[in-house]
Image 1 (spheres, rainbow, N blue to C red):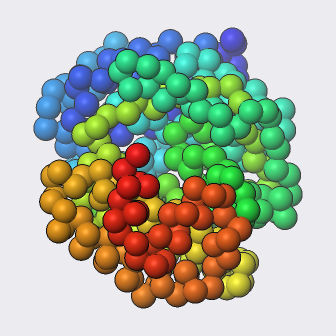
Image 2 (cartoon, rainbow, N blue to C red; image 1 turned 180 degrees about the vertical axis):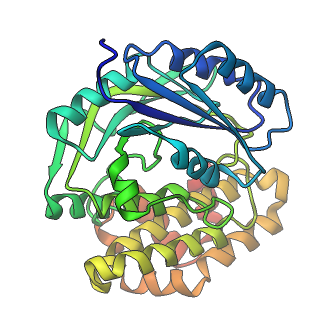
Length: 343
């Protein structure tokens, strides 16, 4: 592909990934779309990553390196945005990797539809097997404020009768974003240390300003399932953090949609997250013990927000497996819940 196409900035936060950084960088440096800049953000990594980043900068003039104090993933991305010169932005996590035509595929769709963001498909890799996500099976376009606003709600949570809790994965990797939206509306990332999913907060801020969103079925990103990653490690305070995120979602969306609409989506969001958290608790029984497991399940099911949601939400409309777990949580049937979630 010609170098005369518009510049794409690829922002790569780097922290404690010396085992994976070469794999990631090899796929970025060999992109079929050549007019790119790769911005490596060394977030005060304690391993050899800072030196590796500098070596990459030495061998390829398309690479920029920022060394900064450790503040986490969200703020590392912000540091990249501050110096990015591209018309489009792509975020890649340094322990993952991408297809070599990622930039080309996403850029072609962005130009074809004048899109503010293009989402690609995902491969999930666990070191032994690679599985393709089927969240998007054909090209989809959301055009105009009304359609994009509807999509944003589906990013948070779908309607009760829908089979899936969300329309697709909310993570910002696998996508190409128009830089002008960031600049015009001063959009950046919150810290994952403040909210358990900084990507959802970003999605609300960014998508609410978009006029055209595209999703393509072609997989462009390899998400590597690392059991030691932040998203996989069991934490006893996870539901507290989910509740904090839930309240922020309600706060941000209410001025856009009104409280009645937002509550319906927010309710399913919290039910889904509570179910996931309960499953993690059950599957960690051998680590935390039976007594602590029951106590942790109790704290979720007895939560005042959960009890209010169970009172007002049409649980009977949910798909069977979700409906079953919701009723078991509502009526605090912990021992049956353990059997169902432990499968």
